[in-house]
View 1 (cartoon, rainbow, N blue to C red):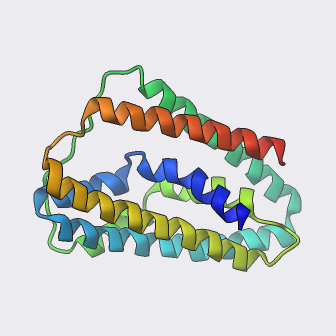
View 2: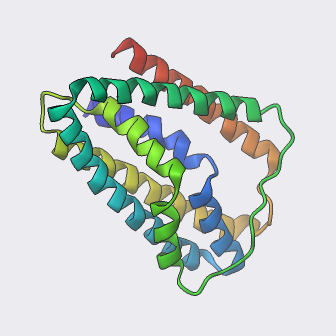
Length: 202
């Protein structure tokens, strides 16, 4: 259970960090309404479900056949977390505003599915983070699916809540710069701590 909690605390900062998935969902909320954003969220979760199946089975095969490669993936994953943390903390000192296109699509579930499925950042997150929390001595497929379910469930809760909040409170084209700096700085700090914990416990 503690491993699942640590995994959730590690991926939450990444979910809150703006990327193709979040920007697409917000564009649906601003372009139409909260329901459209929530439908887009369902599509995004469906896309990550495909990644979950592929990664869970793939990591299991790698552990059995190429244990050295598995360890290499783990350390590359830690390096990727530190890379993300560095850029998030660096962004705090930059002047920026996130542009959100106000464009509703006719089928947000379909578009959300492909947004997540073809998102290279999402693929990297799966391979960078999931292997860190898998116990090679246990059932790797079951662990992979459990961790993936937690990730998808968190995405669903966060993005649906965000859709409701944005629709009700702001309806603005730009995310407040000061608030985003707090999010980026906090996310970068949490990712740094997560990477440090993984290094110590490797």
